[in-house]
Length: 180
Image 1 (cartoon, helix red, strand yellow):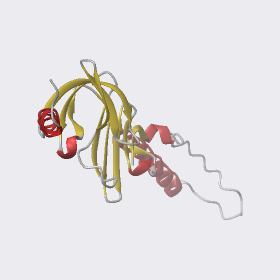
Image 2 (cartoon, helix red, strand yellow; image 1 turned 180 degrees about the vertical axis):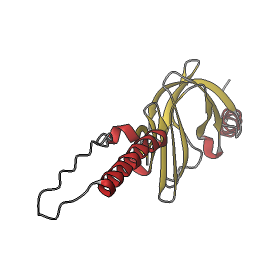
Image 3 (cartoon, helix red, strand yellow; image 1 turned 45 degrees about the vertical axis):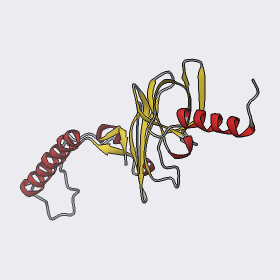
């Protein structure tokens, strides 16, 4: 039975309203992720959806992006215009955030703030331990200098002080997993 153009348009509009409903939730698997575009491809049953947003608002580079791991389950919602975005995932590869000029990236390698330009975070316990040794060595120098007689005949000072403080090594104080 042939349909009129009006009937076909009506049926198509009805179909679109059912399929592209704002707020509809889909449980699917992540096939692949494009971190640069902030999108992923998902599969629900046998249907693949491309360009699924990792954040609902795509304007600018600010905001928080949770990047799901390929193969993870994701809960996806429809937003205006039929676009999809990831609400939650069973596993994540990374979290990135940008607010004005401040950035933060959290992934399996650690935490990097502001592109890691200031190297790793200080391990304060090791720094304090090293500083205590420096302090004790300075006290030894102070004591040695204050109790050693100096001859007035231009003879070299025969002062011998043994220091216990090792040379500071950056890796002893740096937590490479957190860069700021």
